[in-house]
Length: 219
Image 1: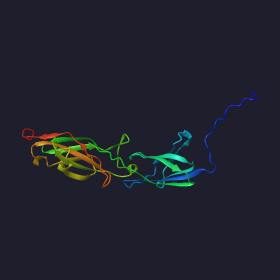
Image 2: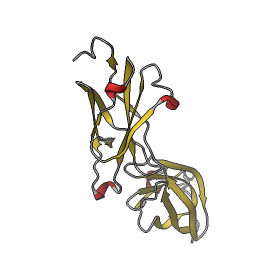
Image 3: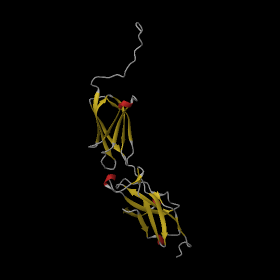
Image 4: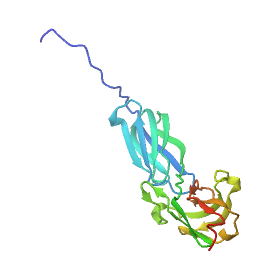
């Protein structure tokens, strides 16, 4: 009513001209294009209206008219680990963040099965899973993978120095070990690795154990 006035309620602070055009440079550790990654700027003021998204192109995420402030940068891309950079101060009219490098997720093969067939062993496996689906060698996956198969005794399964490389550069999902008959009587396991590039190799996926003994070796 007349003569009574409330105390003031304050808005956020707005600085005239305090906006930035932002470029976030991207790369990957396996040499593939980072284009198509989702780049998100999240202002640390916790205002949901101060969250901005862009899909990267030309190896960068581009943003226009971003208010000055402190932001967390989140970069997401299928087959790569999500990368978060915290507390980045953006306070210039044109802002460029140094390159963020995405690291490839090196999914291993799955369901490795070793089957004894007289004096040979058939090793089969499934392609690596990626994002809930099987990896394929199509162009949409950006690179082809190949496999290597190794063998060791069950006792030495955790000792990489004891593994014997049987074959590499396999582009199918099976391999036949024709040296089984030459092995000593013992228990053996097989390991299969997925090679995404020459240097980006998955952890091994282990098969079931096969035992070679005088009784089972009789044909």
